Length: 290
Image (cartoon, rainbow, N blue to C red):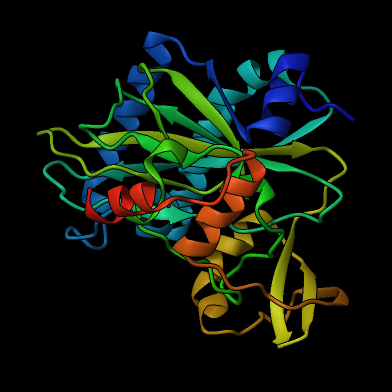
């Protein structure tokens, strides 16, 4: 089943792993920006490199914010998608004068392999390389099919370790969005400006897709649990410690061995996917010393 009405969107997501679209009006963007500003005093850690409302606000507030973002997005998503489930949102804010890049990574796997889940990342101001735009590796959703969760290592790879020709910078106008596969490697630049870089996020999948959590039972077995989306927020500290809340239902177990990855192997797989020859000495030196 094609999730999006526009066949071109489905094709780009399949081939590249991402697509950019206009989404919110100027007024809606300003409203969300104002909601974010009202949350600043709720931050638990004012020195955190990234403010995430679902993590840094208390549970009730994070649920309220999630519902408000979802309500604003829903009329727009109904125009571009069909037979879908939209999971509520959060704010991601990179503080002003932050010198840290967010390394390349993949998002948690929250549905089964027969289904696709996508992140929707909406810029609430013009976003570019100077203030923390997203950068990504086109086609990297094809590199490997790991399950990712608090139980399974979500590798972080620095941008400098990847051939520059593979890096795509996603500059967006306020109200524009990027939709991308959870398995697509992505990160964000540092914010060198004097204003927080703020984005609103949500997730979309097909209506029949279950919401699940993959837990490492042992080195060769994954346990798949049915989970309510908000339980992922409520019990996240349990998951981080390798614990499963008692009320969760075990759906099934399956044989699974997690595949390790580093910058060298990721470059190799990207060259194969893009039909490149083996990396030459000159390109290798450029990547190392740039």
